[in-house]
Length: 456
Image (cartoon, rainbow, N blue to C red; front, side, top):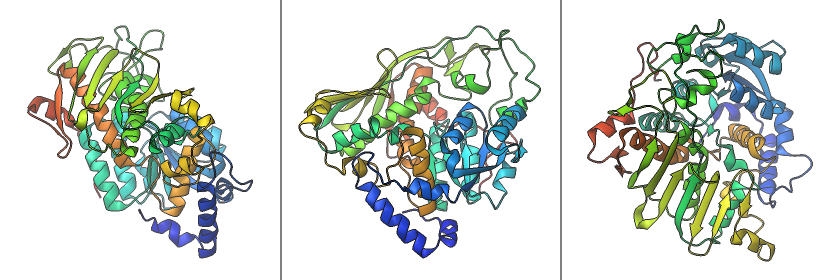
């Protein structure tokens, strides 16, 4: 169990005893039958100072879900207009605003940080936040590369910090968590196939070089990524920055990591719960891109370049397979010897689900797959409550960096396979691609000079 000395220094023994007793009671309740006075109320009575790194739509949306528990005291963003918007919305303009996130990490009164930057800006501030003694809620996908994930896991073990990844489907108790309980109770038998349907990605016109918005420090926004011109369509709806970063491999993995980080995570969770714990051995398939690729790099540099359509087959020991595709209903399909279920953000269906009417799950079934942690609220608010509870108690959250990277490696391998146009063999123990030096070179990316990770 991870330790959190700063919390333990400030909490009284009596309060800890009460909270743990309440947590045990909540963990035994079926689904949502919590007490009127909840652990979430306890946290709201003693709000936590938080620093926000990345104040775009995701950062502000997340804080809105958790605002009853938090005091936003510092904000860092390369776009001062976004920082000001978050400041006005959550702090009445009283939070300190910075362009350099390191100013947030320097503050002793901040014990918790939320990182909601573009993907290429996740790893560096996360590692530096852990070394600065902060617990972190970091948006998904946690990394841009496989090797970044190795480093994050190493530093988390070294520092013992609490890190929650923003894969909030793990805290969607009436859909995804319930589906995992069905798997965990053996209702599907041995799983032989899982499928993550995540939809395709958009294309763009050729985007001309443009002047960045006055409030945006474009060089800082690029950060560790290569220095390039800012591009934006004449109507302003397409660019290589802000929300649209996810359609450029330079800053993201496209749909394969954007939605893959959600649905591949559920597939991997199901396999782990079912005792099918060995990692993948190969991945292959096909992908379509809106630009030509040569040696894994886009030939055209002026338009979106991530895969728009794809289907990949991931092979596991014993014949189990995972399908990652864009061309069918968004959601996760889990097929086993005894039956199959489909789960999405709006649906949980299949014969094993229908059979719950006559053969319900045990009352503690949800709790068992949720690490016996308190179950309060649902979806994004529940995921934040889980993080803040684990921050206070020094516990592993439901979406820790280690399980996250197990599945995100699959998403990264799909992206490498897509760009190279060939199948890959994977050694899960060494986390290396077998017999393919070019593909192995894509497990990491160089950081631009001046933006290297500050270790320790």
